[in-house]
Length: 173
Image (cartoon, rainbow, N blue to C red; front, top):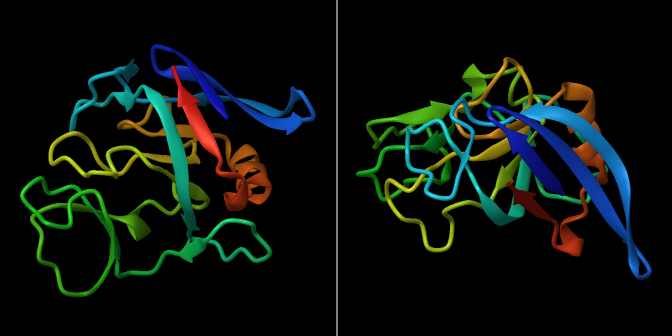
């Protein structure tokens, strides 16, 4: 998957290998961070991290079955921790025991996170302050806080198309 950006707008294209060539199977207009794409993305800078990243699990507010990617249904105890002082920084946590100072309460974003996929940015190793909660999700405005977003119908197509066994990647530029 490629993300070609210009300011906070982008084109997202999905490719599938067909013998020696790559076939484009979906292309969608989308958005990235309010401040565009950066090779030096940091927590809270409203920049989408430039680079080549693997894709993690999918999650959302709507139940989905028959996918070729792990899918987690969001409930009221689902958070993505963005507290730079927490040992849980840049991680999905499902708990009612809040031990961090700040996190995205995922259920509070039912339209954006109706269908989502984790972009594995700042995951191995996790560096506090380098950026957190970077996802590919449904578009709800004219920019994101650092994620990549596409219209809901395209996001649903992407989530149904992704096969985790094929080691999918996203190239953000």
